[in-house]
Image (tube, rainbow, N blue to C red; front, side, top):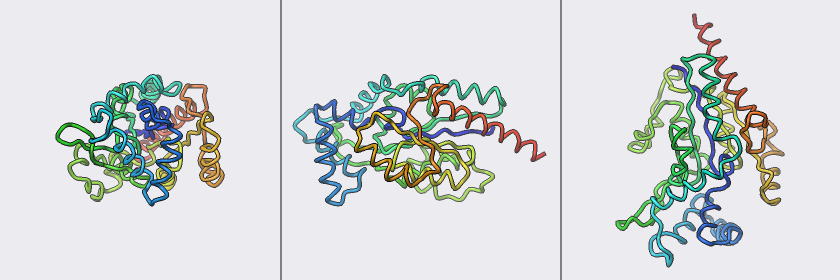
Length: 285
């Protein structure tokens, strides 16, 4: 069966930034978290994913004054974000599946999240659990008391592309967890489970540029999400560093309804890929 893969970033792509929502739930001022604490670590040489994860552990990890969090707590918090899904998302999976099945019953579509956010928070969102085949995100480890204490997995900008290759080669998530080097195994292009040209990537910012570049190089589709509700400083940063310099990426508000730009483009993109798959089949015979 031919498969189409629709791969999303999570924060500011499917929901508002989940880390900001998490720290606000602690009663911490998000502006101070990002503008002071995060900035200080960044200036000390911490890479952004390590900086924010260290701060999370500083605030809610083992040994903190507040009740230390567990991964179960993060999962439960993630469930609260379902109500914050951007418009049209809840209807999108079924709409795209119908487009694919109406085109050809032997084509399928799968949904994935590849994010630098916390995996347990993402998995806690019941919409993701119901509709997505796999979630790849950062992980925190617990001590013997089930209290968060360690960095377990950090997904940086370029690390995101690793998981796109895993999806491409058909490496199951469980197998990848047991053998992270499995992605380096050579697989003949014609034997890969989901060709790059059958992939669509949707992301919102600098962390997604390597994925945009990979899909561009390999013949896949990619779309940028630009939330006009962001503060002016964040909007200008995205404009100056991505939109102004990378004119090959189309940018859209996070609205997945059929008549919205992004929602319409994703539907057309899936239809186009499905039609191309059928055309290639006929050419093969």
